[in-house]
Image (cartoon, rainbow, N blue to C red; front, side, top):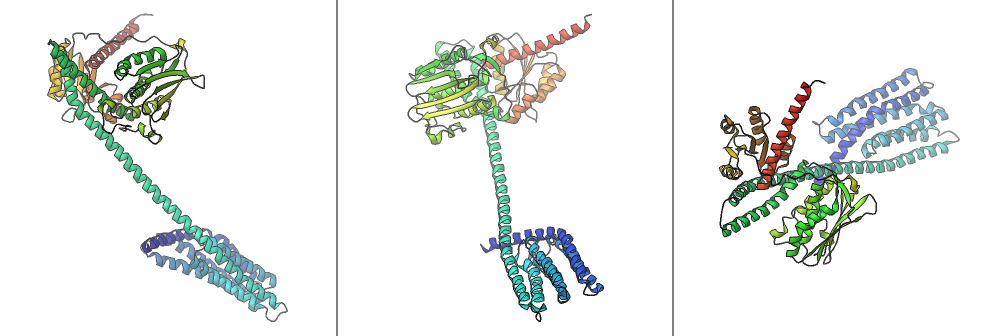
Length: 599
């Protein structure tokens, strides 16, 4: 505790020196003018040379204080106590010089003495502010001036008729000085409190910055851990998924087909949980584009109702949809579907009996449609309603039942809702159920555009595919699957090997892993292959979900597939890449043809 007080006092003394130094550069101007006025007034009763000598002494002290006080805060090689003594000494010297001006008081008229007293008491009052009321520094100036002033009045008119008045004025000067001492004490207390509060605020800000830095480091470490764990888990899952898809295309008996089917279902379930981690990484990386369009809610929600109906029936729940046929909104249907899917999926998971209903109604504002997902499930206590939106947090699942997911669904929902600029409201009563409500911008049904035909199910043309992956099991599995689709497959473990195998048999499509050995990555592999085969369609397949990897692929304009990739996803992405390349070739031909045609 004494050490703390010593530290506080040292910081106060240092701040005081800085204040006095600042004031020491401002004070000489008004004080110098006051000294000049006193010197001119004294010239009427004393020799001019004596008055000028005193004035020069005042200016010399002011110059010394200006120079010395300005250096004191920066004289770190000197102990702080020594610097404080010098400040006190300079204040005493200044007070003594001004006290010397009262030596001419007995020869001045009463008016001149009054003016002299007013000027000197004014300097004493001003010293309260310029010294921050520090007891020693302030009083070193105050008492020499005050005592000399009181003596000048008390002894100056002893023989006169009004001697009592002079004594009274002398006493009033002492009383005024005592008042200034009290004011100085309060001023220093305020100064000390303000300095300590400011230092405490600085310390608190430093602690907050440190805590923020630690939180950001922890968040970055968590993101790196999730990305690394996701990558390491996705690699064998991707291999199993490819082998499972290839195995399903081989002739087997009924029992074999059942085993393969169940194995692929288990892989799909595991893949969906890994995709939840991927969604978090994508949203944190801010690489998810929003493509708003106008669409009708009734057929869109009917499809979701049909998809979730089997899951509801298995739990003997009623999945009800109530949506007006004219309900139409403007939003991103893909991202909004992820939101509604998560809400319906959660409602079914946490409802043991009763129903889950999806209801659409007009909002209070006619320009809004309100979509609510309600259930008659377990409900959420008030103290947990904010926490359910945290990552990996689940209500009523201490055993971590995998059937209830990873606890990422609502965390993804909040990120998507923010991305879509929507408002999500929650109302829940334990034992009675929960209601999640979304407000969406209404649109005119006539603005709905007909949907594009999907490419799902279209067979691949006979193409040559170059697969670059540094893990042999992935290469073997990819070759088995693509060969079953009639593709000629070239496999390589590095970019250099891929270039060598492509000589004489130009690939039609490149499939490359993102992380390759030897410091290579999928983006550099694409660039190298495209330098040899301009316009080569390419897809990157990766188990890396780190936000920076996602941004890199996004900025390079490449499609990034995340392991494990299902057969349908892979074939669909390959079809899209080939179709995009055909469009580019067609556009180039049309531009060339247009340039060559005469107008």
